Length: 284
Length: 186
Image 1: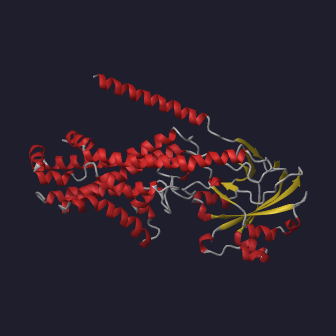
Image 2 (image 1 turned 90 degrees about the vertical axis):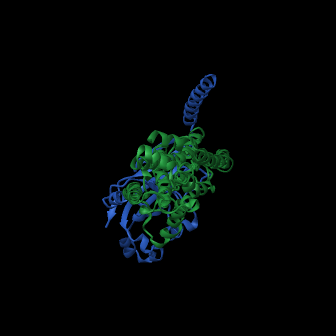
Image 3 (image 1 turned 120 degrees about the horizontal axis):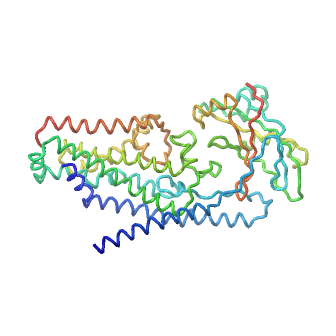
């Protein structure tokens, strides 16, 4: 049952569409960066080297490093914001709505008759979580791969004023000194948050047969966290998935331990509600 | 089968190309030649030599209590409540006719940097009104706020274990003066 659900999730049209949309945003950002940031940085180098050695501006140039280009941390363009705004949708696209489709078509009844209710629910949950997580991670990995071939793996010098993460932020030592590890850790974090958003749709599918409501619920949750909870409860960034998800940690003051607790709690609570509510009802 | 073989070939080619390209990019990265100077050494930058005469890490409030004439430059916002002030006395000597004296040298510690408040700097150094001369001792004030640091880093500042680097240039040559021996005024 598990293999079948995973195969359905990772070969679905929604999965391919999610990857295409994500990679499309990444490629646009790559082109934008090459033209607007990288080129300008190289022009600044030529211009600086052409100055007299005693000129006030001579000696002040900084090489553009990996994280200055990677979509997760590049904030000069709008693509980071676009990607993280579309993030919940990309996570939902592959397989999260399949639960509703399965019940509508009667396919769920057949699977439950053959494999049992708990096996079906568990397999569905795992497949939805993994497909959601992978669909948001692949574009980030593609962006990282593109920039690894363009920019050196150099830590960012805070003096260059190009850092989007500040010294007091979560994982700042990694950001400034080990950029590749920072990006990989953050892709891992985003994998889990993508999985959480996809599972949220699965949970809403329990209570509503409305495709739009179920499909958009993670986006509504994300927007609420980003624009309301953040303002109403200042200082709660570490418990706010929408503030944790973005590697640029934009305006956020996130503590690593609290963020970890928040992610782990979501990973346990959402499936738990899904399983508990499933026991009480026979079918939608 | 043929298609599969081509796919494998393309995949292996892509991996090899990526590895080669990544190695190339990193090998030719424009990393500066680094020169780290110790506290008692003299740095020559853009025709001017700088030598550190004195470094004092003040308790922020204590400094302004001792020198009330500078009180207007004190940051009163509560956000900056826990702070220190690193006051550097730097002796400047003109080495070449064509020179540039840099009054806004960045001070780096951990992954934070500060530059002197220009108005405070101006008030501290009235001698600069007549231009810079060999032998002048310039005062550079650096405010260090706990809000910019993690708890363990701030503890290092309070325990006088923090190392500060005064940066003179970055590329093609990175010149830094390390400051780790300073007087503490609590």
